[in-house]
Image 1 (cartoon, rainbow, N blue to C red):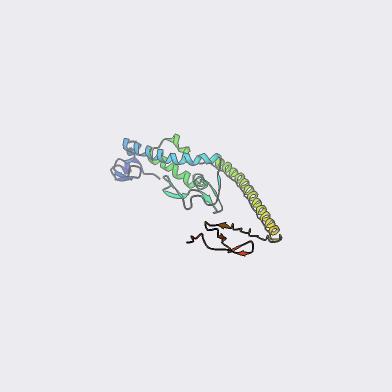
Image 2: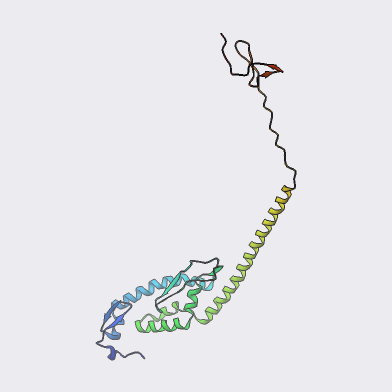
Length: 219
């Protein structure tokens, strides 16, 4: 049971929102400093929650492990929770966040946080996921997982078909007779130098021995 204002009046209490000790009792939550600090926390945390809630109505299932080891800090519970749900083969984006927001422990801590800090009651629902919404979300996840598994199976079958086709092609090639590589014959031209000597690199011209070296000068 919470202490009354008279019981805590004059005693120093620590405010985790303002991060300071005070002796104002419950009056502290109505001070400008506390309201400003609380507004900054809810605004900053709210932006992260808004990003996650986009996937509450449209679940996202991704191949492999998404952001391994990633955690999500909950201001109201004071703990890190898994950001995504994964079995390393497939990941449900922000699945861990939604599970946490739908838990009874989180709901209780949110209600306590709001009462202890005097937060705007109109903002509370943003940080909660009711049971009906969470059940609808899980149904959407199941449908996404079925679609994902069907897509993966289709890709697997395509890969198997490509491998089989490659094996057939390689078997056909291996059964063909080897091709004989014929080197084209090089024909060297016979030339005549200034002295009338016939020259050919092979040293022969029409069956006769000729000069086989380079062009030389005769005295």
